[in-house]
Structures are given as C-alpha cells and as structure tokens.
Length: 494
Ligand code: SAM
Image (cartoon, rainbow, N blue to C red):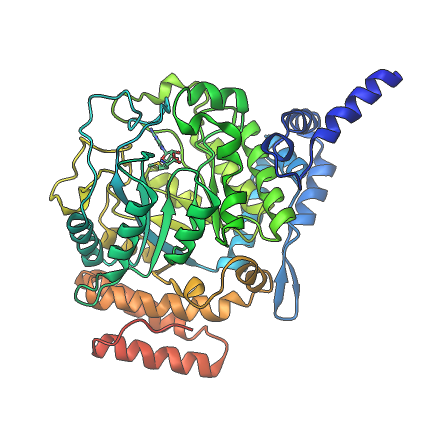
C-alpha cells in the first residue's frame, strides 16, 4: 500500500470514535463498510467463527456467570455466516446465553397509543403528516383512564406509551400528564407499575422531566443507521435531522434516564448494515456511560394505511430475521430483547428460544383501541400479526415451559442502568427475578385468567417454586403466593 493510501485509510479510521458524542463518528459509515467487507471475507472461515463463538460462551465461576459479548466486527462475521450447521450452533449458543441471564421468564407488556398527530414525514409510517386517510386522534385524560382500565382488566402491569411527534398536540406536558394519569389508576386489583416511553427524540431537559415522572425505559427506534437512506426516508419534520435523532440516547442518559431501548426498523435498509450500526450504538453507550442498552427491539416494517412494505426492497425472510435475533443475543448478552405483535405466533415462538425476553400481548396499535370491542383499524399504526388475547398468550407461553412475568420490581427498587447490568452480569438478578415472576404470574392467574390457564399456571408455579435455591426466599415467595391467591393483597416483590 502506498503512503498516501495508507494515510487516507488512517484518516478514515480516525473518524470512527466510539466515545465521540457526534453521531457520524460513533456510527461511522466507513467503519461499517469495512466491517461488512471483513464479514464477507470471513463468513466461511470456520476456525475464526468457532473462536468468536467460544469467546461469547457463558463462563461460570461459582454462582456467577459472565459473558464477554462480541465486538461489532466479530458479530458481523457470525451474521454473515451461512453454513447451516454453524447457524444451528449459533442458535444453541444464543439459547444458552439467554437461559443464563433471563432463565425461562418472559416479561409481558402492551403498547398504549396516546396520539397519532405527527408533523414528520416518515415514508414507512401511516402517521406521516401528509396522510389524509386516517382520522387524527389524541386521548383525553378521561380516555387515557378508560384505556388503562381496559388494559388492567386484561392483566397488564407494564405499558409502553407511543405518540407521534407534534409540538402543539403532543408537547412534553401532555405526555407527562398522561404518565401521571396512568400511574394514578387503581382499578380493582389492577395497577400499571411501569410506563416505558416511546416518543420522538427530545431535549435533555425533557428527558429529565420524563425521568422525574418515573418512567421505566426510554425507547427510541433508530429506524435506519444508514444516514443517506435515513434522510431519504425522513424527508420532512424534526425527525429528518439524523444526528439529533441518533444522539438522542446520549441526551436521555445525560438527563438521568438509566435505561434506554434501541431498535432498528428492519426492512428499511440492508440488514447487515443495520446490525453493525446498532452494535456500534450499543458499544458507544457502554463506552460513554458505562452501561449498554437496557433493551433492543427488533421491529420489521408491516403493512399499514398507505404503507406497503414491498415499497422498501430490504425485507427479510423469517430465517434471516431469526439469525439476527440470535446474533444480537450473542453479541449483547445482558440486554433485554423485545418482539412485538408485528410478528406472528410462529415467528415469536422461534424468537423466544433464541434470545427474546419480552413480548407484547393483545396489542392494539390504534389510538383508543383497547376500549373498542372489535379491533379498530382506522388509526392503527401497523397491522398486528399476533391477534390472540392476553390469556391465550399466557397459556401458550406456559405450555412451552416459559414463566410469563409481569414483574416491574427492578426499576422500582432502583435496580436500573449499571446496577441492573452488574446484577445481571453476576447472575444475581435471578435470585429476585424468578420469585418475582412467580408472584406476579399468580396475580394474573387469580385476577384475570381463564379457568384452564389458572389451572395450568398454578401447577407451573408449584413446580417452579421448588427450584428457588435459597430456602428463605422460597418460603417467603410461597407465603406471598398464598396471600395473593387467598386475599386481595398484591404487589409483593424482592
Ligand atoms: N414518534 C416516535 C418517533 O418518531 O420515534 C415513536 C413512536 S412510533 C409510534 C413507534 C415506532 O413504530 C417507530 O419508531 C417505527 O419504527 C415503528 N413503525 C412505524 N411505522 C411502522 C410500520 N409500518 N410497520 C412497523 N413499524 C412501524
């Protein structure tokens, strides 16, 4: 290589800086392209792939289990590999990692759409400003209350609130008021104990206000990490500013929000590019704030009013989608992974075994949808593939040997950010998560489940109680479950 070329290469490499606060530097286009070339070169390099997988394996020392995770370059090689036997080994490794940190628990949540007013022009989203087909709607506080009662009556304890971006219809004050309303409603034995928030990128000051309002995770999907495509897909509105959007998590964490959730909208750009960009984002958060993403979501573009996913030519097969999930789990072992009802029962089933730890159930993606008897379509953000009731989803999970969990204890006990991660890393989280899952499941079974689901669930709880290693924890959990099933006492947690 001549000196000039070497210099140029170093210049480009210097642009990548994991600790930089500039989007173009911590998500460096050149670094992604070089990573993709490296992955392509090595995708059949079985020795290297085995070394990478060996590095990612859980290591047990006494009662502690740790995982090294992978760099974006290493993970890209795994994702590029298309040797069937090795992909099968990746699935096994992903499952092993998931079991090590999340056990067989699956956390349940539901989205709550507050408003579909939006000033943005996102080409993939039916809420885009120019869409005149859909009625615009924003919940009043009374309507928020009715939606929350309907969600509580299903058994939900954890919500993700969603809203379009609109400075006058959905200002931060409106979002804060809705959060206050949601937390205030105690209907029968119900309560919403954790509100996660998915609203557009905002200022440090507004993130601080969300933190003070007691939110759980701040979720913001990047949509695509490919800057040029991002700018094409977001032609108008505040969201068209790629850097402001990409740097949002830094502002959220600066504003005191410990738990942030990343996501790519798969289908918009080349999945390899997105995967590498997302891992670089996770590495950036870890490098700057000492804590990686609390969750990673894996949404795919779905049909919606005036949106045809075929207009984006990067749609993925289910097999590729599953491989992405497994590779994220291997690369970012401690993160919670979320799959929504955008996906079918079949895809969700496979996804659960290879990395997913949280799912939504009985979702309505329309504004005010939970108070309607039939699922309304007119204000829907996207088509829901998995349309089962929460009771059916819970039954299905237990049939497959999972423990559905409605636990929200960690953030209420201050186990957020690096505290959550270090507990998770040392495997300690299992000492509280497992009994908490059983206690919250028993709440669901007592208050909301069908006869058949209750029967199946109580048997599962009985069996799972026996596996709690600490004798005193087992005894206390058993006592609390007795109280839950024989009285109106609720909300016990470790
Ligand atoms: N308005 C907020 C923002 O701009 O980030 C977020 C709320 S939006 C209701 C939630 C997410 O839904 C978006 O970030 C996008 O990834 C996803 N979404 C939009 N259109 C979709 C579609 N047609 N299919 C699947 N997901 C979609």
